[in-house]
Length: 163
Image (tube, rainbow, N blue to C red; front, side, top):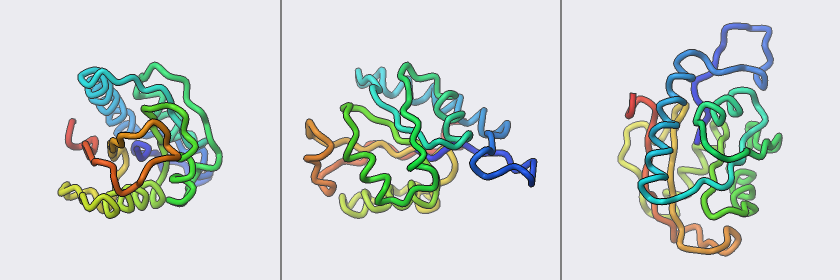
């Protein structure tokens, strides 16, 4: 998941410290409701969340109202797709959420879809807008054992799709 829309109100504010704006807060509330329902329908429990250390990614996670405690990772702040992939490979739970930033999170989504030969037809997939969420399923018991080309893209959604 990419963080929700953030505020640019203060030019003096450092990028890492930018909070969500009103639209971002509305988007993340809708995403949270959608994601909770999606997980419940599939009898899945989100057991792990790894979130960039920026204010906007932490506010995105908090706004989802999920029943798990996130791991806050400074290495995910503007991380490359390689760092994000390494983070996933080190995940420990069978259902894991990663919240990061573009361009890395969008590049990772594109790499996965290209390896799986399953490019989502959604018109916004290529620019992976704020709040964009890609759900992929693999049939493995360990993230380290995954053949990254063997996953299945289950869902790609943006806040605009559900608002």
